[in-house]
Image (cartoon, rainbow, N blue to C red; front, side, top):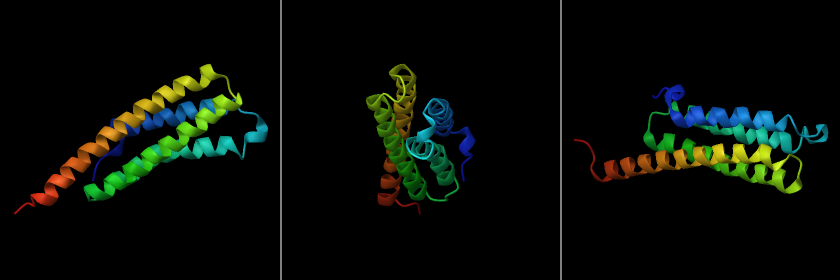
Amino acid sequence: MRNFRELQIWQKGMEVVNDVYQVTCLLPKDEKYGLKSQLQRSAVSIPSNIAEGCSRHSEIDFKRFLEIAIGSSFELETQLMILEQTKLIREEKVVPVLQLLTEEQKMLNSFITSIRKRTTHSQYNPKP
């Protein structure tokens, strides 16, 4: 079992959550149960799934939760782009969040790839 608080992917995910909450505070009140709620849920899902994956005892289970986290990150990216396109929030407020999210996606992708390589290798070379 890993300590999720020590993982950079979890820490970066928490930064994303913080930034998303700051941006969603700027949304009109009529978006409280619409896009605002969706943005916040997608953001929270990223570090939450990383943390839950850390509780799993197999690399394959951990990887599955990381894949859910990266899926949530792409969902969040789409929602942030909707904010830009609909001009609900000024572009200069959304762009830094998108940049941070892109960093998180790259880190998650690298982590998933490294686990995939380890688990594929261990399947073909089982320990005695």
